[in-house]
Image (cartoon, rainbow, N blue to C red; front, side, top):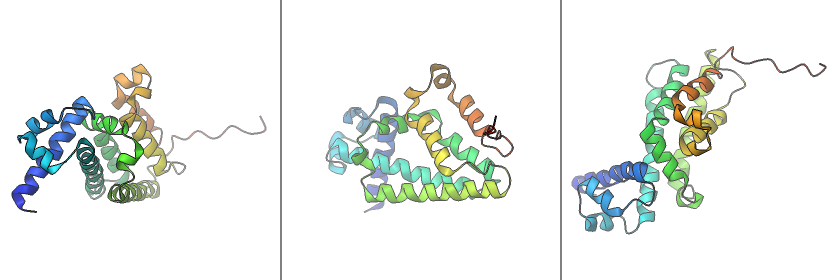
Length: 195
């Protein structure tokens, strides 16, 4: 693909991600074309239908997640700070809105795609390495796993409608409180079975 064609393609996908975050997966294709600065014909030449465009947006989203995780993990910060930076980045309002919009799609629309599944599995594996590094550094509870963080992100970014109203109104505060509970030393001992 020529460099200018690649730039146009990237511009369309980035514009689509913004518009979908703002207006949902049924956003008008014309609005996406306008945001990208291309004609509707150009948009349809690149993406013959909405499903093809949404698949590209999902791919863009998951690649961005993986790239950001790699950047924070390799930043030289301690593992706990890198975890906090990644979770905070993923929960930023615009990004969370995109995750929420994509979450309404049928599972087959994105996760059935081999590339999407491969990239997602890769960033989860690298996130797990970061969690284990934080535990080895003594900054994270040993009984917390990467799946706990993935579930936390899923609730806060993909399903904010399931949060109680006060939490949904100030998600960053509650996300910080939940993450603080994952720090080393925050665990409460299990109740004594004999009591």
